[in-house]
Amino acid sequence: MQIEDFAQKNTVKKKNFNLNFTISKAPKKAKKLDLHQDISNYLDKNQYSFSEDMQEMIPKDTPPYLDNGEKYVERIARALKFFKQCSLIGPSGTGKTHIVYLVAELAGLPLWEINCGLQTSVFDLFGRYVGLGKENWIDGLIVNWCRDGGILYLDEANMMKQDVATRLNPILDQRGHLVLTEKDNELIHRHEHAYLIISMNPFSSEFAGTKPLNAAMRRRMSVWLNFDYMSVGDKIDEKEIDLVCHRAKVNRDDAEKIVKIGAKLRQEYQQGDLPYGPSVGDLANWAKIVADGTTVEIAAEETIIALTADDFEVQEEVRAIVKRVCGGDKFERKFV
Ligand SMILES: Nc1ncnc2c1ncn2[C@@H]1O[C@H](COP(=O)(O)OP(=O)(O)O)[C@@H](O)[C@H]1O
Ligand SMILES: [Mg+2]
Image 1 (cartoon, rainbow, N blue to C red):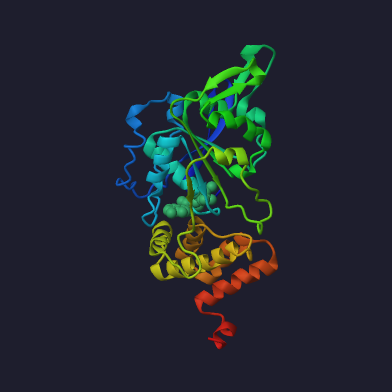
Image 2 (image 1 turned 90 degrees about the vertical axis):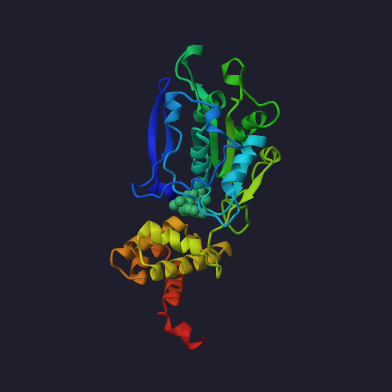
């Protein structure tokens, strides 16, 4: 996971049930949150409170999210207030998970995170019996969210299995409830502060393995926000260079080269020519090795080149782009 630099796995014991979730944790030197992002007119943390167990699930010290005036944080908060749910679309590495942590932190809401691409079963998500008799029922993660509230974050929602998607439908529309058929049809009403955020890569026929979002779920989502990389192709965002400098403590010239190369790689990825487009986190990791006294080109070998693919030919393509931007590709220069 790319946000590892500020994320940490945790386990909480709840009703004899081990619940794995992820809460955010910033590195010690992280900048303070941008206090201008005030979402209290949409989601006001003073209006609700959660149990001690759930307090621990509210992210803390999430690094600032940089945008170019799109006001993503506020727009997500508005969608949650008006419709209780919101969809985020964008290639991986564009900060979708990051912003969900930030919104949860600013709103003071516990975060329940599920990656739908992983083989999580209906039992894990909705619940199961661990012995005979009603008292041996254990709620799954989605049922816990529905009863207790917070933000449910469904990452890669388009990869969700049909049986899970079908069961979610009644919670997401006016009915706002969940029926536990396994447990004498128990009706669980959606908590007043149970919000849903889904995210996914844009569906594209070039990328093997992606599929469109389940149609019934699509109809139940009102707000769709598109995310893109800060820098792509020839469009370089100065703020991304600043971010790499800040995270890696690298000099600005090297940060600029790294962002320029990253922007080219992303363009190739979006055109379907490379299997991966680097996030700003990936670029910062590369820059950290450079800051330790290596050149951009040499540090690329053990970071960006290896990260993009195992395949030698693909690695050669990445290497050529690195060389071109660093000015070392004589073959290219002859034709300029
Ligand atoms: N606009 C942004 N501002 C700050 N950090 C960002 C931004 N976009 C991406 N990042 C960083 O890039 C990395 C990948 O982001 P992540 O949230 O995991 O992307 P996604 O969920 O879209 O795949 C993280 O280290 C994240 O902090
Ligand atoms: Mg993500």
